[in-house]
Image 1 (cartoon, rainbow, N blue to C red):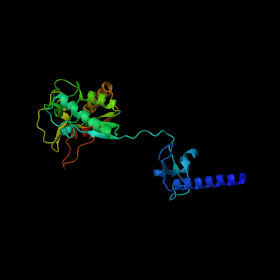
Image 2 (image 1 turned 30 degrees about the vertical axis):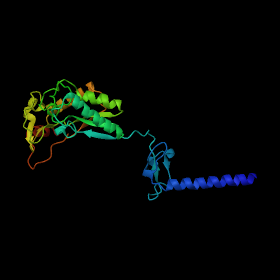
Image 3 (image 1 turned 180 degrees about the vertical axis):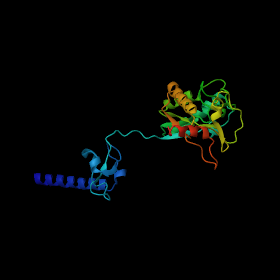
Length: 270
Protein backbone atom coordinates (compact mmCIF):
# COMPACT_ATOMS: atom_id res chain seq x y z
CA UNK A 1 0.00 0.00 0.00
CA UNK A 2 2.78 2.38 0.91
CA UNK A 3 4.70 1.50 -2.25
CA UNK A 4 1.62 2.14 -4.37
CA UNK A 5 1.06 5.48 -2.64
CA UNK A 6 4.70 6.51 -3.08
CA UNK A 7 4.67 5.46 -6.73
CA UNK A 8 1.47 7.40 -7.34
CA UNK A 9 2.85 10.53 -5.71
CA UNK A 10 6.12 10.16 -7.63
CA UNK A 11 4.30 9.84 -10.96
CA UNK A 12 2.12 12.83 -10.13
CA UNK A 13 5.15 14.95 -9.21
CA UNK A 14 7.00 13.83 -12.32
CA UNK A 15 4.01 14.66 -14.48
CA UNK A 16 3.65 18.06 -12.80
CA UNK A 17 7.37 18.81 -13.21
CA UNK A 18 7.36 17.87 -16.88
CA UNK A 19 4.21 19.92 -17.45
CA UNK A 20 5.68 22.94 -15.61
CA UNK A 21 8.97 22.64 -17.47
CA UNK A 22 7.12 22.45 -20.75
CA UNK A 23 5.07 25.49 -19.84
CA UNK A 24 8.20 27.50 -19.02
CA UNK A 25 10.14 26.35 -22.06
CA UNK A 26 7.20 27.10 -24.30
CA UNK A 27 7.72 30.78 -23.54
CA UNK A 28 10.62 33.05 -24.39
CA UNK A 29 12.31 35.27 -21.85
CA UNK A 30 10.54 38.49 -22.76
CA UNK A 31 7.10 36.86 -22.68
CA UNK A 32 7.52 34.75 -19.54
CA UNK A 33 5.79 36.70 -16.78
CA UNK A 34 7.58 36.03 -13.50
CA UNK A 35 5.12 36.10 -10.60
CA UNK A 36 7.28 38.55 -8.63
CA UNK A 37 9.54 40.34 -11.10
CA UNK A 38 7.50 40.51 -14.29
CA UNK A 39 9.12 40.05 -17.70
CA UNK A 40 12.82 39.32 -18.13
CA UNK A 41 15.57 39.94 -20.66
CA UNK A 42 18.31 37.72 -22.09
CA UNK A 43 21.68 38.96 -20.85
CA UNK A 44 25.01 37.47 -19.76
CA UNK A 45 24.62 35.52 -16.54
CA UNK A 46 27.54 37.42 -14.97
CA UNK A 47 25.47 40.61 -15.16
CA UNK A 48 22.51 39.08 -13.36
CA UNK A 49 22.27 38.02 -9.69
CA UNK A 50 22.17 34.22 -9.39
CA UNK A 51 18.79 34.22 -7.68
CA UNK A 52 17.19 36.34 -10.39
CA UNK A 53 17.68 34.32 -13.57
CA UNK A 54 16.08 31.28 -15.18
CA UNK A 55 17.53 28.81 -17.64
CA UNK A 56 15.77 27.42 -20.67
CA UNK A 57 14.20 30.70 -21.76
CA UNK A 58 16.97 31.93 -24.06
CA UNK A 59 17.51 28.75 -26.11
CA UNK A 60 18.84 30.51 -29.21
CA UNK A 61 21.45 32.41 -27.20
CA UNK A 62 24.93 31.32 -26.03
CA UNK A 63 25.11 29.12 -22.93
CA UNK A 64 26.19 31.99 -20.66
CA UNK A 65 23.15 34.07 -21.61
CA UNK A 66 20.27 33.61 -19.19
CA UNK A 67 16.84 35.09 -18.67
CA UNK A 68 17.40 37.80 -16.08
CA UNK A 69 14.72 39.48 -13.99
CA UNK A 70 14.92 42.82 -12.23
CA UNK A 71 14.70 42.84 -8.44
CA UNK A 72 13.07 46.26 -8.59
CA UNK A 73 9.35 46.47 -7.96
CA UNK A 74 7.51 46.61 -11.26
CA UNK A 75 5.80 49.98 -11.51
CA UNK A 76 2.39 50.55 -12.96
CA UNK A 77 2.17 51.12 -16.70
CA UNK A 78 2.04 54.68 -17.98
CA UNK A 79 -1.22 54.66 -19.94
CA UNK A 80 -1.66 58.23 -21.10
CA UNK A 81 -3.57 60.31 -23.60
CA UNK A 82 -2.71 63.78 -24.84
CA UNK A 83 -5.12 66.71 -24.78
CA UNK A 84 -3.88 69.13 -27.43
CA UNK A 85 -5.17 72.67 -27.06
CA UNK A 86 -3.16 74.31 -29.85
CA UNK A 87 -5.57 75.22 -32.66
CA UNK A 88 -8.22 73.59 -30.41
CA UNK A 89 -7.31 70.13 -31.71
CA UNK A 90 -8.79 68.23 -28.75
CA UNK A 91 -10.17 70.97 -26.54
CA UNK A 92 -12.11 73.31 -26.81
CA UNK A 93 -14.74 72.64 -29.44
CA UNK A 94 -15.34 76.40 -29.70
CA UNK A 95 -13.57 79.45 -28.31
CA UNK A 96 -16.89 81.11 -27.51
CA UNK A 97 -17.95 78.43 -25.02
CA UNK A 98 -18.84 79.55 -21.50
CA UNK A 99 -16.65 78.38 -18.59
CA UNK A 100 -19.39 75.90 -17.64
CA UNK A 101 -19.34 74.44 -21.14
CA UNK A 102 -15.55 74.39 -21.15
CA UNK A 103 -15.48 72.47 -17.87
CA UNK A 104 -18.13 70.05 -19.12
CA UNK A 105 -16.01 69.21 -22.16
CA UNK A 106 -12.99 68.51 -19.95
CA UNK A 107 -15.07 66.28 -17.68
CA UNK A 108 -16.32 64.31 -20.68
CA UNK A 109 -12.72 63.71 -21.76
CA UNK A 110 -11.67 62.61 -18.27
CA UNK A 111 -14.67 60.30 -17.93
CA UNK A 112 -13.81 58.69 -21.25
CA UNK A 113 -10.19 58.21 -20.19
CA UNK A 114 -11.34 56.65 -16.92
CA UNK A 115 -13.54 54.17 -18.81
CA UNK A 116 -10.57 53.30 -21.02
CA UNK A 117 -8.48 52.56 -17.91
CA UNK A 118 -6.00 55.36 -18.57
CA UNK A 119 -3.94 56.53 -15.62
CA UNK A 120 -2.42 59.75 -16.96
CA UNK A 121 -3.25 62.71 -19.14
CA UNK A 122 -0.80 65.08 -20.82
CA UNK A 123 -2.55 68.44 -20.89
CA UNK A 124 -1.17 71.16 -23.17
CA UNK A 125 -1.05 74.32 -21.06
CA UNK A 126 1.44 76.49 -22.98
CA UNK A 127 0.89 76.01 -26.72
CA UNK A 128 2.29 79.24 -28.23
CA UNK A 129 3.84 81.26 -25.44
CA UNK A 130 0.45 81.73 -23.78
CA UNK A 131 -1.26 79.79 -21.02
CA UNK A 132 -4.31 77.79 -20.09
CA UNK A 133 -3.74 78.56 -16.43
CA UNK A 134 -3.55 81.74 -14.36
CA UNK A 135 -0.10 83.30 -14.69
CA UNK A 136 1.52 86.64 -14.02
CA UNK A 137 4.31 85.72 -16.43
CA UNK A 138 2.30 84.80 -19.52
CA UNK A 139 -0.93 85.92 -21.22
CA UNK A 140 -4.11 83.86 -21.35
CA UNK A 141 -4.34 81.70 -24.46
CA UNK A 142 -6.29 82.69 -27.54
CA UNK A 143 -7.42 79.05 -27.72
CA UNK A 144 -9.37 79.51 -24.48
CA UNK A 145 -11.20 82.82 -24.97
CA UNK A 146 -10.66 83.72 -28.62
CA UNK A 147 -8.67 86.85 -27.74
CA UNK A 148 -5.01 86.68 -26.85
CA UNK A 149 -4.46 87.78 -23.26
CA UNK A 150 -8.15 87.85 -22.35
CA UNK A 151 -9.01 85.90 -19.16
CA UNK A 152 -12.09 83.67 -19.05
CA UNK A 153 -15.21 85.23 -17.58
CA UNK A 154 -16.22 84.27 -15.00
CA UNK A 155 -12.63 83.56 -14.08
CA UNK A 156 -11.54 79.94 -13.72
CA UNK A 157 -8.28 78.02 -14.03
CA UNK A 158 -8.31 75.03 -16.45
CA UNK A 159 -5.09 73.54 -15.06
CA UNK A 160 -6.29 73.73 -11.47
CA UNK A 161 -9.64 72.25 -12.53
CA UNK A 162 -8.26 69.31 -14.50
CA UNK A 163 -5.80 68.42 -11.73
CA UNK A 164 -8.59 68.26 -9.15
CA UNK A 165 -10.95 66.27 -11.37
CA UNK A 166 -8.31 63.92 -12.77
CA UNK A 167 -6.93 63.08 -9.34
CA UNK A 168 -10.46 62.17 -8.20
CA UNK A 169 -10.35 59.55 -10.96
CA UNK A 170 -6.82 58.35 -10.06
CA UNK A 171 -5.45 59.93 -13.23
CA UNK A 172 -2.15 61.81 -13.20
CA UNK A 173 -1.85 65.21 -14.88
CA UNK A 174 1.33 66.04 -16.76
CA UNK A 175 1.70 69.64 -17.89
CA UNK A 176 2.62 69.87 -21.58
CA UNK A 177 4.74 72.88 -22.53
CA UNK A 178 5.98 74.14 -25.90
CA UNK A 179 8.88 76.37 -24.84
CA UNK A 180 9.97 78.15 -28.05
CA UNK A 181 6.95 78.27 -30.34
CA UNK A 182 5.45 81.77 -30.16
CA UNK A 183 2.73 81.73 -32.83
CA UNK A 184 1.33 79.21 -35.28
CA UNK A 185 1.67 79.33 -39.04
CA UNK A 186 -0.52 81.94 -40.68
CA UNK A 187 -1.72 83.47 -37.39
CA UNK A 188 -2.24 87.24 -37.57
CA UNK A 189 -3.77 88.08 -34.18
CA UNK A 190 -2.16 90.79 -32.05
CA UNK A 191 0.05 89.41 -29.31
CA UNK A 192 -0.63 90.46 -25.74
CA UNK A 193 1.83 92.93 -24.25
CA UNK A 194 3.26 90.37 -21.80
CA UNK A 195 3.85 87.69 -24.44
CA UNK A 196 7.45 86.47 -24.63
CA UNK A 197 7.78 87.65 -28.24
CA UNK A 198 7.05 91.17 -27.02
CA UNK A 199 9.17 90.81 -23.89
CA UNK A 200 12.17 89.49 -25.86
CA UNK A 201 11.38 90.90 -29.29
CA UNK A 202 14.96 90.77 -30.57
CA UNK A 203 14.90 86.99 -30.12
CA UNK A 204 11.52 86.43 -31.82
CA UNK A 205 11.86 85.30 -35.44
CA UNK A 206 9.41 84.47 -38.19
CA UNK A 207 10.57 81.22 -39.75
CA UNK A 208 8.69 78.78 -41.96
CA UNK A 209 5.55 80.93 -41.43
CA UNK A 210 5.70 80.36 -37.65
CA UNK A 211 7.03 82.67 -34.97
CA UNK A 212 9.81 81.13 -32.87
CA UNK A 213 11.88 82.23 -29.94
CA UNK A 214 15.64 81.78 -30.23
CA UNK A 215 16.68 78.68 -28.22
CA UNK A 216 20.21 80.09 -28.04
CA UNK A 217 19.16 83.19 -26.09
CA UNK A 218 20.13 82.96 -22.43
CA UNK A 219 17.33 85.39 -21.57
CA UNK A 220 14.76 83.18 -23.26
CA UNK A 221 16.18 80.08 -21.59
CA UNK A 222 16.03 81.66 -18.14
CA UNK A 223 12.49 82.84 -18.76
CA UNK A 224 11.36 79.32 -19.69
CA UNK A 225 12.97 77.98 -16.52
CA UNK A 226 11.12 80.60 -14.47
CA UNK A 227 7.82 79.71 -16.13
CA UNK A 228 8.35 76.00 -15.46
CA UNK A 229 9.35 76.56 -11.84
CA UNK A 230 6.25 78.70 -11.36
CA UNK A 231 4.06 75.83 -12.58
CA UNK A 232 5.55 73.17 -10.31
CA UNK A 233 5.46 75.50 -7.30
CA UNK A 234 1.81 76.48 -7.65
CA UNK A 235 0.18 73.38 -9.11
CA UNK A 236 0.12 69.72 -8.05
CA UNK A 237 1.17 68.48 -11.49
CA UNK A 238 2.58 64.97 -11.71
CA UNK A 239 5.06 65.76 -14.45
CA UNK A 240 6.29 68.29 -17.02
CA UNK A 241 6.48 67.41 -20.71
CA UNK A 242 8.61 69.59 -22.99
CA UNK A 243 7.57 69.47 -26.65
CA UNK A 244 9.26 71.19 -29.60
CA UNK A 245 12.24 71.99 -27.38
CA UNK A 246 14.54 71.90 -30.42
CA UNK A 247 15.20 74.20 -33.35
CA UNK A 248 12.30 74.35 -35.84
CA UNK A 249 12.14 72.19 -38.94
CA UNK A 250 14.27 73.45 -41.82
CA UNK A 251 12.49 75.37 -44.58
CA UNK A 252 15.71 75.38 -46.68
CA UNK A 253 16.82 78.72 -45.27
CA UNK A 254 19.05 79.52 -42.31
CA UNK A 255 17.35 80.00 -38.97
CA UNK A 256 18.08 83.69 -38.15
CA UNK A 257 20.02 83.07 -34.94
CA UNK A 258 23.39 84.31 -36.17
CA UNK A 259 23.99 86.59 -33.18
CA UNK A 260 23.39 84.01 -30.46
CA UNK A 261 25.23 81.35 -32.44
CA UNK A 262 28.28 83.63 -32.72
CA UNK A 263 28.17 84.17 -28.95
CA UNK A 264 27.98 80.41 -28.49
CA UNK A 265 31.10 79.95 -30.64
CA UNK A 266 32.97 82.71 -28.80
CA UNK A 267 32.47 80.80 -25.56
CA UNK A 268 33.82 77.57 -27.10
CA UNK A 269 30.36 76.12 -27.42
CA UNK A 270 29.44 76.60 -23.76
